[in-house]
Length: 510
Image (cartoon, rainbow, N blue to C red):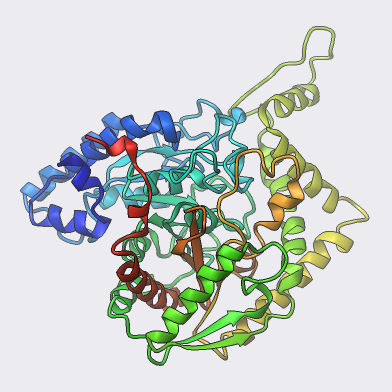
């Protein structure tokens, strides 16, 4: 019975809870059982909060029994996992870094407050690349997370733990953070759904900062509707976040449900010429699945045209100047003085604050984080600021203008989520540039602040998932949910069910 429960969508779980066919505690315990069975294989979690999750489930069940659930969202009572980049009161939050190992925050992020207010039990904290800096979850200080489709392959990054937890049925939902594709690329690699909302549409208060002008919290799920329902739980204005948009959450769940009708007449979809799935770096299997999905969209009535965003080819270079510059600034606070790791200089070395900071940061940060701090510090240094950081910001403005002009012609834009399917461990760690080039399709959304969603569109010849990405205009996130849900529904007819049914799950064996 527990295996049947965990394979339900979050929306189906919520319906069973409302109808009192199953309790929140039963669902939470079922997920904890899967976590216990799967974690030796997956390592999706850095911390499992079993006792806390069951207590939260019991509290919700008590409310439900008393009829005290007025105003709660549809997902009330459904368990969730949280990327360990998001602060959780009383539960360790490490950003997968030695420098924060053992830190237990005294407060909750805004999204966690909303999750708790919704009565959604928190299963635990998921693994990631250290400080969300990576594309494979190989840069975690606490070990790799594995792809549930193939243990030899990465789950993507930085949020590989959240994506792997969702696709391996360890959690029906998860939260991630997306700075350059860290929700969407792992979704593509694991056959799940990942959403980067409009910048400012979900509060960043309590999200450990990587690059503040790019970071965005968003949903990880197994279906588009589940992602939309979670989006509505966490979205909205927050006075504690200066970049938060003072506007209500767009009607994303209604749009997803509309998409399930598979009628896209009048929906204008633009294929981005510059990242259309062909050319250097794009695997043939990715291009093939993408083109097949485009034909599916056309068969449902969508009007598909090609649209050019001429400055998109410069976005990767601009991103890898802006992002490390902001990393350099944000990570300066990890100095051993206030919280986290402190390493004192060895005997014979002057016991100064400067030396203590140097030894702490040397021991606490991994190689990839150090690389980005150094790059960012250089870009911000006297004599180079205008030439590098200033120029990158000008390119960013051009990319924003390209998106704005494109959305005058079409309702949504489309591209592959990633140029490749999941690659093998160690394949790109020795070549950072090759790793960075894998972000070419996801980065533009972060530079422009527009929302984007990744949905599965099939598997390649190696039976590894391929992702299809929609972009929508700022503050019109609902526009991408409709075609995403329609594509998902049409392809599930072709597959005979959710794409995850094509994945072996030995940890679910009775």
